Structures are given as structure tokens and as C-alpha cells.
Amino acid sequence: MRPYPRRIVFALTLCAASALSALLVAGCGDASRADATAARPNVLLLIADDQSIGDVGAYGNPVIATPNVDALAADGMAFDRAFAPEAMCTPSRSSIYTGLWPIRHGAHHNHQFVRDGVQSVAHFFGALGYRVALAGKSHVGPAAAFPFEFLPGSHIGPEQVRIDGQMNDILGVIRDTTAPFFLVVADSRPHTIESEPGGWPDPVSYAPGDVVLPPYLVDTPETRYERAGYYDLITQLDGLIGRVLDELDATGKARDTIVVYVADHGAGFAFEKWTNYEAGLRVPLIVRWPGHVRAGTRSDAMVSLVDLLPTLLELAGAPAVAALDGASFAPVLRGERRTHRDLVYALHTNVGIVNGGAYPIRSVRDTRWHYVRNLLPDASFTNNVTEVGQGGWPSWVARAAGDPFAAARVARYQHRPAEELYDLEADPAELNDVATDPASAGVLQRLRPALDAWMAEQGDRGLPEETAR
Image 1 (cartoon, rainbow, N blue to C red):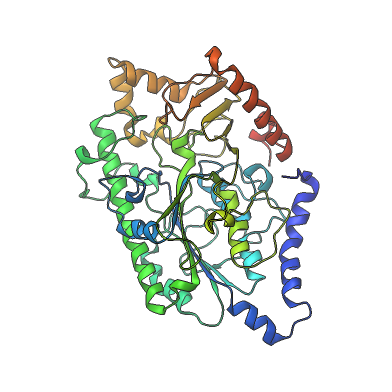
Image 2 (image 1 turned 120 degrees about the vertical axis):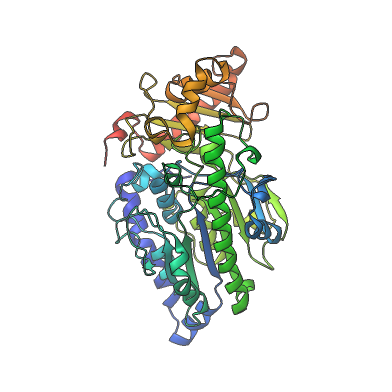
């Protein structure tokens, strides 16, 4: 992709929405514009908050109840290699809405606003005549960059919002016949702030002994209990999604609506959220569009969430926006291609998160290998997991005194080498770092310069970005 200089990329993005609007109206009367708008599909974007890919029935979890999301997968295409650009709410959501990597849109720190001049889905689809609305959590800003129609109870900011009380307003958008809709439904569940004391449902409906604990977690009763509560919140979210989809069906608009289900990043347990490990970056992504996306299909094409906006623009029949970092994977959805990206990149900064000190990370992966670079390897990695005890962390520390696996997990979470490398075919849980294995030298020689080139393209200076606006 062409490396636009940072000084002009935002100007290019700023003018893109007006360019789209001009293309729509040039040489057309009001009737022609109305006809073009009416022909465009609706878009329903369902965003789960802090949900790992393995915690959905359609992705192989045999315990958790997600019948509505599973039905979406049965009626559409499920992606097995979809990745967040950063495993934190603000950076990832900003990338979903802008089609830009976090350094380029500027909100690469959590709770940070994007740069002035950045435009988003609200501009691009608004220029196409859509009613662009958001229900639930935004966790992006400023308002000028994200001019959604915020349904009552939603607004610019990081607050956790559950959509139970917004259902009538959501249904009002879906029932609207005056314009196609682009509706974001972003409930805060199963956000792992709920794992703080007193936050889980009481009683938890899943037995801790029944949860499927990933192998990168330490198996303690405390971690199992928190995972069970997290399961409960996922099932609650699935029920809300079912209500929205039922209403869509009742309006007769289902065939004319692209439905996307995605998580912003992985769960708030160790080695998931706030990391560049697979469990933090790899997310469920399901797309349904009857008559256009073949039902019951799966794709192992590698896609990034920065690709979602250009994909939806193409599906809506809009001109491509050259200044975006993302690239449309619409050909994959149409069955015309089986692959999309050869490499997928990601980054992390701990600056701006609660209980976090500077700990910058960059990474790149191909279909087999995952290369992780820790820019401050001598620092100690901290966040709500280590300082508040999220995910049962204190029980890990206690277990580490007599358990080599627990000791290794605790040590690796907080102290990491400058480089890590994982063979995802042999080691999908990323338990065996092979960066120092001489047999991996060729892989490192290939992935190191690829990561360097991406950082240079983005204007990513590495350590200085920890304090940069």
C-alpha cells in the first residue's frame, strides 16, 4: 500500500467524504439521488466488547451458549483469521470506524481522541445518504471525527453502556423507511471491568468447572470463576443480539442488510487484552448478507479490522477512498478470492491505561509465524490484571511458588525479551518462544524488515510514540 506522508494523509481523508457526496449528486436530480440511496444495503454492525475468538459457539466453544451469533455464522461467512490492530478499546474502535492504523489516526493510547481532520464511517456513509446511528458504547472521540446520531444514553466517551434501555430507539432506526441505515450496536458486555469485585452476575449461570480454559491461562479456581462470569455476560449479549435480529427480520429488511458481528479485541485476562499475543488480537468476525455472501462458509483469509470500513463502502457501491490504510476484502465475501493480506500488523502502548506504565509492543504475523518486538524489554508490564487482580492473577502468583508452569506464565506476562517468535502451526497457544532457536533465523530475517517497513510507512517512531499526541 502506498505510504502517504503523515502531513497529507489526514487532509486526504478529510476531503474523502465531500468527494463521495459530490460523486453522488454530480449530474443527478433529486429523484436520481433518491433512487441511488434506496438501492444501497443497510448495515448493522454488532460489536462485542472484550471477547476472545474462542468464546463463541460458532468458533468451537462447546459450553458457551451463543445461539444467535451461531445462527449468524450459519447464514453467513465466519473469518478464522481476523485481527484487531491493537488489543484495547479506543485504538481498535477508532480503527474500525476510520480504516486507519492507530498511529495514523492518532488514538493509539487508550482513552485518546483521534487527530483533528480524521474522518470516520459517520462521514463516509452520511455522504451516501445513510442514517448513521450508534447505540451503546462509543469510547472514541472527538465528536467532529465521529458525528454519529447517538441514540439516547450514548455519547462520545469511554463509559460502559448496556443497550437494554435503548432497544426502542434501536428498533426505531431499523424501522425507518426514509433512508438506509448504518447502525452500530455496541453493548459493553462482556467488558472485563465486570471482573472487578462485585461485578459478575450473581449467581453466575455457568459452573466454573465447565468452562473451557485456554492453555495459556493458569488453571486456578479463581480464574475459572471469573471466566464463568465472563461466559454469562457473553450469553446475555447474545440474547440482546437476538432481539435486534428478530426485529430486523420482522421489518422484512434482513435480505437488504449487511450484518457484521465482531469483537474489538480479546478478553481482559492475562495474555489477552493489552497484549500483542494471538489471544488479544484475534477476534471473531462474521458477515451475513443473504444472496451476496454464501451461507455457512468459513474463510481463513487474513484480515485486519482496518479493512472493515473499505469493505463496507465497496459493498455499498461507494467509490474507494485511497487515503485509508485498510483494503476491501469484499472479493473474499463474494467468493472471488480465498486470500486477502499476506501480513497483519499490530501495536500496543500501555500509556493511558489504568495501572499501566510504558510498555510499547509491535508485531507482525503471516499465515504461520508471529513475530513480537518489545521496545522496552527491561520494563515491568503492569495493568489491571497485575494491579487489581483481574482474571484471578493473585491465584497465579500464589500457585507460582510451587508450580513451574504458573511460575513461567507469571514471569513471561510481566517480563519479556526484546523479541519473541511463535510457530502458530505447532504452537497456537504461543507457549514456546523460538526467537533464540537458530532454526528460526530465516524467519526473523524476513519478518524483522517487514515490521520495520510498516512502522516507517506509518510514521511510527517507536519509543517516542509513548508520549506523542
